[in-house]
Image (tube, rainbow over all chains, first blue to last red; front, side, top):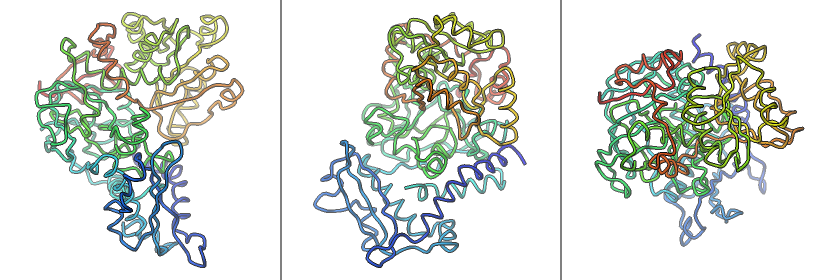
Length: 162
Length: 391
């Protein structure tokens, strides 16, 4: 195994192990709220005052596009850090293996929400969402490590600790 | 266009790739005049940061001429000669507003990777793997620069290209270490590593009023540069006991601020270096903190150790007891270049900051693979291999 391959194994054993625990925690049903199983609130802090984050109670477009599938709330962040923009799915997503499979294939609604929150933050703070692709690149050798990294990269805007 | 690509562990090649194009309204396209290798690239080239894909374009320290501007760009126009900060930062999130630009919330389109590794994602960096945002690098004829009004800086007339090149990364990285390390008047500052970043950290320490600056390395030509161009005292760790020398130099106290400008592939002498090599090669740790350990031990009680070298994930046998019991301040950062580049360019224009000597080997981009080999092997006194994409 080359250094990249073994390096990926190290990453998998170390940070990946911690990440896996977080993933499993995240896909498990949340605590009961009034008898309902709810997802955790996902939150970003936007470096703008509340009235600019939700003018006249309107949510930023990526969140508004999720309609009634999400609850949204805002509150001022302490220390003049802006506004906390929080959202959660009204219906719990599947846990366990089905949930993990949905995350791997990019079909988990939590990923959609995570992406919507990140895009909302960028639109509010910067005015547009940063694009990276297409980026110039040379010949992509087909290797298992490369395929894994491509998959991880495709999910990386929709996954994470948010 | 032609570009220097990473093609596998310790392998690079110059390939023909697509030209970059404007993707966001605040982008510019730069015709790259000069682009330099950096010690931190060696971690990528060697596979120590396993988030490179074959074909990725390397390079994050560069300057060039603006050839295309997006509709929202205000500060730059076609024809401008600009140097670009290696980090991609929006300038408007809370971290950027605190001038912690490398921590930008909006510069990395792949945040999940570093969130899993480190808890939260820093900003993006050109040519520094998909973990740092997947931005194409600058070792190419052209490069796309996002958030150009934030990260591209017009080079003053009278500052030559080779000097200005290092305002992109090496100099502001050094400034980050000395400034956030809290260097002030009367301080004795020790810097581990006499490469471009280490020399610039030493220069920054002088700029902040340090009374004495000592640079530690093993390579005689780099130490000689640190003496001649930066005015630092130097110590060769292969020829002396660094801890004892520093105690002698500092009246038995130890340096007030210790800046580690080496990173995850540190060399060293003695059993701790051997231990680190074995553990890293067996993948039982990702980083060799040999120089960092020495800095922590050497630092005076109540002093500051600044981690400026690039580390990836996990290091073993870290002297936490020394940090706690000596009351040290331990701090680290990628470079907050946007904060320091204006001052650095002013100093370059005034002739009070010298950097051109770092470019020991300037060559056409087509010789990039050979340049990286020389740089990695420190062949022929190579401090930096610098590439000219347009001949």
